[in-house]
Image 1: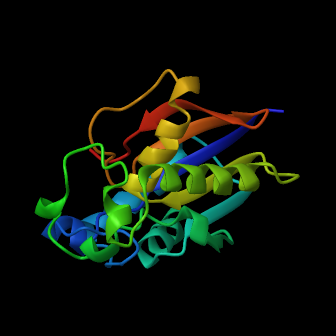
Image 2: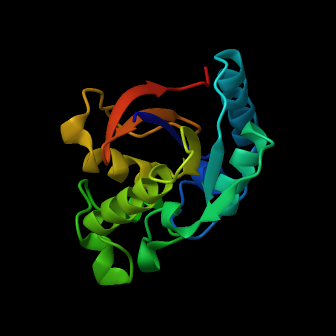
Length: 189
C-alpha cells in the first residue's frame, strides 16, 4: 500500500540569520520564520492536503514550525533531530569543512553523515510502517532532511541542488519499505 510522507524543514531561526552552526543546539524562529511556517500551512490548506498523523523533531524550532502549520496533535521524536555537529554547535558557519562532511564531525563529538542518514531513515520507516498511517507530516531540519534524501536518492528522480530552504516541503511516496522523493515545494516567495 502506498503512503505519503511530507517532510519539511523548520522556519528561519536567529542562528540561520547569524550564520551559526545549528545542529542539536536550538534557536528561536524569527518573524520571517513564523511567516514561512504560515505560508506552508496555507500551501497545505490551498492544496487540500490533510494529515492523519504529525511528528516533529524535539527541537523547539521544529515544534514551533509544526504548531504554526497545523493545530493537530503531534508527537516529538528524537530521531528527527538535526545532525549533531559536536563542539562546532553554535559556532560560525565559516568553520564548516567543504562538502561532503563525511565523518568530519564525528571526530569532534558529533555524528557522521552515514549515522544521520541511517537514523532518519530508521525513524521515518518506523513511523510510516504503523497501521492507519496514510498521510504523515514530519518537521525536521535541513541537514537531516538532506541526508534522508541522499539515503533514498537511488529511488528518486527529483534531487535539489544547494541548500533546502526554510519550510521547504519534500513529498515522498512510501511503499514496500522504501521512499521515493516525488516533489519539492518551496511555499515561500
